[in-house]
Length: 173
Image 1 (cartoon, rainbow, N blue to C red):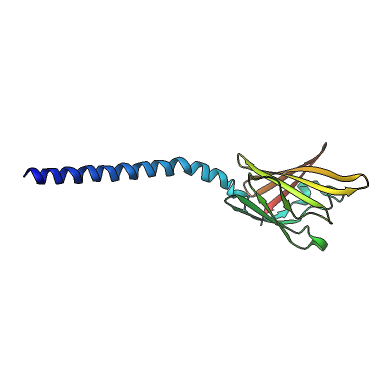
Image 2: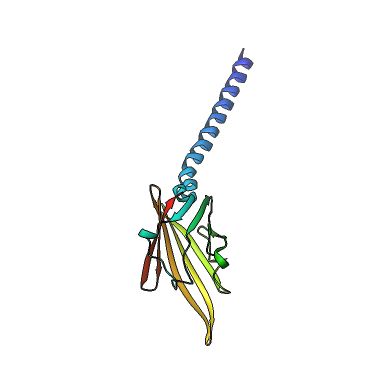
């Protein structure tokens, strides 16, 4: 009888240990979930977007040429890809912004070297782009910042370059 009680006691302790381990793993998963969701940013930015020219400040000469008339934005853990019609002769070009990593090369106009650094600030995607142009006295670095935000079916990109600031507004297609 004593041997039977000892075996039951061991089974009880073993079952309790497994339960404690499961609870600990569940707690770790629950605590990690907000960080994982935050790393994915604002899924509402994802989609197909078309420029609303009446609400946008557009035109040539702003940071390398005309802005996009259409965007396809995809959000994935650790990155946001933006396909736009800003390539040569308005061809589609995809830029992948890696979130919270050092500056990385991205496509740029002409033969300019373009580097980007991206992060999520609350539900806004903030992208800082540096374009490096060879000048007569050496490389010239031009910096701009794009802030992507959404409200309903509207995507707004606020671009700042030096003291200039302008806004592009897109509607979900």
